[in-house]
Image (cartoon, rainbow, N blue to C red; front, side, top):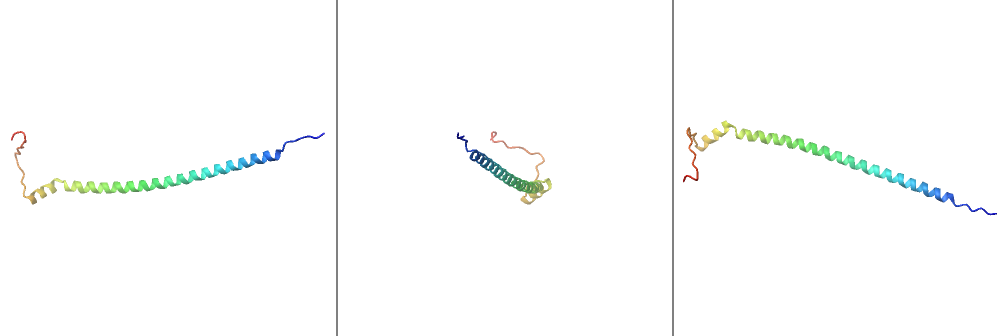
Amino acid sequence: MTTIRPNRDRNIKRVFALCYFGAGGMVLTALFSYMSLVAVKHDLSETRLSLETAKVENAELKNQYFQLTNADSVEKLAGEMGLIQDRNPGWALASRS
């Protein structure tokens, strides 16, 4: 009597091959995810550095603006332009004329 056995070695080899491909895919996915995370962290540090630079520039511009609009600077500019301070200012309205 002949006994027929299925080829179990082929099925086991397929299972092992699928496991190896799956594990390889997982490793590649983890590697690419890590690389993208590093790139995002690098971009974030560059953005923070540029933000700090922008804050310093903004503070310098504000300082220059407040120096220009200082009361002493405005009075000096008015004197250079020949303007005088009116003690009782009267406002001219367009609707009165």
